[in-house]
Amino acid sequence: MCELPANSLQLQLYIVYLANVKHLRYNSIIQYLNIVPHIHKLAGYPNPLPGDYRIELLLRGLKRELGVAQTPVAAITPQMLLAIKHCLNFNLLLDTAFWCACLIAFYVMLRPANVTVKGIFNPDFDLQQIDLLPCSWGFLLCLRKTKTIQFRERQLEVILPRINNALCPVMALQKLKLLNPAEDPFSPLIVVAQGRALTYSVFSSKLQYFFR
Image (cartoon, rainbow, N blue to C red; front, side):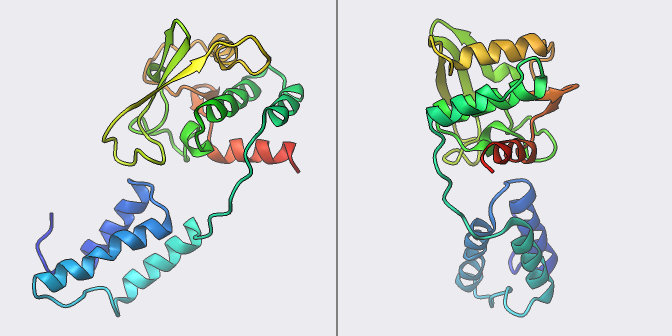
């Protein structure tokens, strides 16, 4: 923890930390910054934020990069999933990985960002092979990062059930493991080629293709 008053560089590094390490949205970063003036006033120092052009530029860039609008996304229905499945080639690793991500997000009610990676695979947050364990009902999935688990304060364990229909997540994951028999338990769970994890951008592009 830095001593007060915080200087411009320390505040800039704090903002970058919130964006790049904590992966917070722009609006959340602003909320975290709102505590800075109160801490300084309680300690008898002036608010260091107003008039700092470097911080203004940094926040302006983050706003442009991260965006602020949160457009509601319609829920995926079983009928929509069946329509997607009909168009996939399950001999292809990419299509199988995409399908697994769809089913995990559907059954666990996760955002796509929770089953994909943002750019480079991060083992501290992203799903690994070791996070998927077989159990009598199907698979046990251990989640360390969701909308309600921001800082790894706990771990969420959910069941991916074995069901006798076309939307069985267990059959999909078994097919993925057959196409990609990973030996490293700490490697990405959902891969598209040569150990590379399925990214959010690839997932989104493929999903948009089906609903354009």
